[in-house]
Length: 373
Image (tube, rainbow, N blue to C red; front, side, top):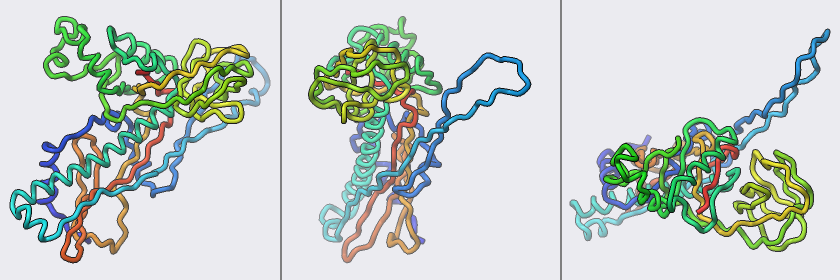
């Protein structure tokens, strides 16, 4: 069994106050699932999804109706990624930089940078999954929301409400949208907001029951080159497969398309004359030959219920006889993610590494929506 090395762990935590850290609003808002995190890399844990039920009038009879069968769907959660962030030192390097505070200061910075790298990758994975698993969208592509009021937050909440989303909700935005929020008078005037938190501290307040956070992972989504497409068949409420004809160009996953009165997020790219949108699907009946408008590239701010997106994150499994001479589990206070910090002996050299394994899955698309920016 490897020894622990408490002095190095102290360095790791000290360094968190020194090294720059990106905003990680998504990792802090999704569900951290311990059961899913326990599975080996590449294996799948299934989360069951119960379907909506129907009701019928009660008609007295000798026997009850022969009905009630349901198809129970499932969502697959997989640990897809296992990575390590290494760094190493020779004896001469340690002496050259200073065996006292100089060496220790650099080493603790390296530990923090390693954690930073891995957390940022998890944040990007969570954002990608949030966008690709979203149901619908609100806003104007290329226009940062909250330029003059809070209507964007009210409208994105409406999508979650209409889809039946429950539980704790978050709205994760980029810093450009954060700037717009911090300049709104109703949030910075103490007599209107009821607090000086935004004005004095820059802290974003909860909006309409959603915890507002910022993330450095929020980025631009490429919506392809699709143009002039039309429906090749009328759609019904709840349809998720959209058949198209005419038109040209690509409609990749993550694109936002306007069909009728709503904007939908594309789940699987256009291929063979159709693409799919995420559940709960179409919100209205739309006639054949209705135009499909592919929205421009957009910044993917996301709103979701905490239970809609699962992050399975853990330290890597270590077999008996593994070569580390020292190891410790350290938890990043900014993200709440735990990492394995290990030390390996080399020939006249020592190697350190910070490692983790993770996977992300949007298990409830109906409870996720995109706020276009």
